[in-house]
Image 1 (cartoon, one colour):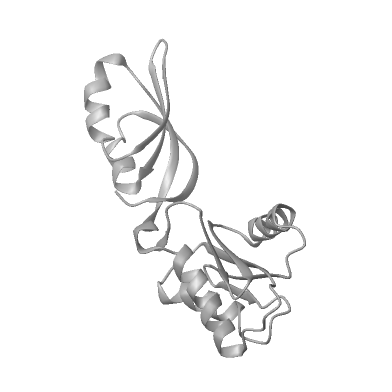
Image 2: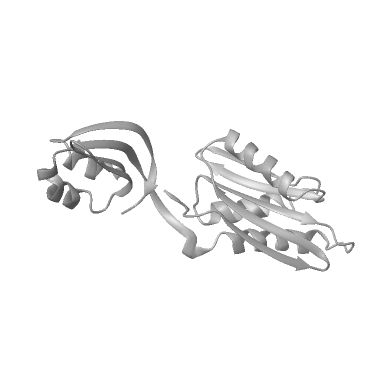
Length: 191
């Protein structure tokens, strides 16, 4: 599955209207609502908060008062055209007094979404696991070798060694002889 590595932002002024495009990796409609609320607080008094998102089979867009299909659909097309999932793109518009016309408006929203969904920010996500693993100091070298492609979130050295990791299923299977606890399944960046 393709998604974005980090949330991003792109701004441009076109015929006196200020456009601010923001991209977010999201996993639920509740998260989308939270981002929209945050954006409205951060960019108060904007004329439009147009968006599109794809979260699995949940696909939605909004023109937020712009002419029908001139904002939400062009934004959404940038997400689906890049085969992205778990992505929200919001384009905030402060109207500058000059009407762009439906065609130019649709092209502008598409451009803003394209600029915030940069190719170098697109990554592959795979289903992985958030785990805690505990092992003896004598096993450190082997465990470090097995988790070379995992993301280490925390390490503690006490009676035994404790790691908090994000691992792929393949790495998890290689750790079977060690004591570990799966906290949750989640999407992780492909190694």
